[in-house]
Image (cartoon, rainbow, N blue to C red):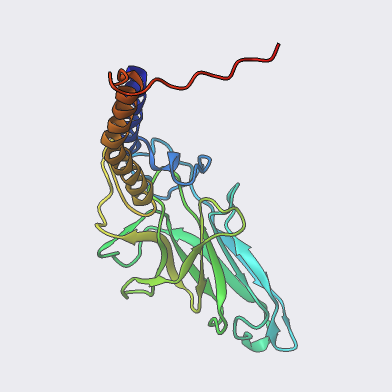
Length: 259
């Protein structure tokens, strides 16, 4: 009986300690247990002590029979942090028969992201001719910061807008993909204050809220079932240890064994 009480109490303490411990651990620990990502920040946040310069990308694509050929442009990082892929005819054909030139580069000068927290570099995508078909943009993000909920885009001097976004099916971890219909500025983040968290502070955003909510739900279930379990065990112990009433008939004797 006493051992059962200690076991239930230990389970309750573990459930209560989980959300508190989770808040003290860098976000990447419980963001789907992703391995650490060596993300290269153009402007490192306070949590990152050192960061190498992020890479950029430049590529040129042939035009065949008036159609820009398909392909992709990926930044020159060990693990590309921004990658644009597109189908044939995604860009208008340049006049004069020249190739289509596309650049993807991280920038420090971009429209103010009011009401947003951007957790990746801001990448500017430019092309020699306008984009006329939907293309795919994949952005890598760091496990040091909260996971983004969307990819956002803005034009020069314009407002940031969220794009329909999904986790990348290529790695399933630390990637977010969106379909884009124009060039401009792009970054991943989530809605909320645009201030950068201070070192050692607790930040809840992006995908971090779900594990904490689940842990709190487990805690509520455990604590709600604790009194009932104790009552049942106490009742079972009392029934097992209670003496037989004095006037109750004795149990029948077993039949004699055969010789």
